[in-house]
Amino acid sequence: DPSEWRRKRPVVMEEIYRLGVALGGVISGEHGLGYEKKGYLHLAADAEVLRLMQGIKKVFDPQNILNPGKVFDQV
Image (cartoon, rainbow, N blue to C red):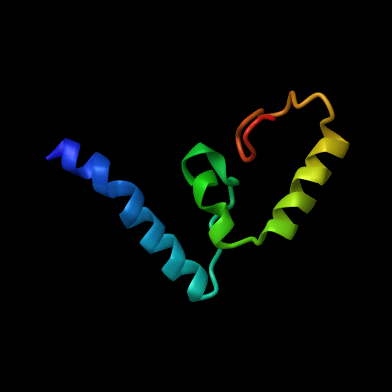
């Protein structure tokens, strides 16, 4: 049932990503993180790492024109 899958999908995906990280994996792949996985990045990177990543993006993209919203929500 498509509506049931839409409801359960986030829970299933989080379980998969948690297991992957626990086994030494990462959330992103060779093509980056993207819209689908960005909500799960916190499972692999703590708040300090996320702040560092946002800071690096701000230095190299101060106007947020390169893939806005792709990894970090716009503020």
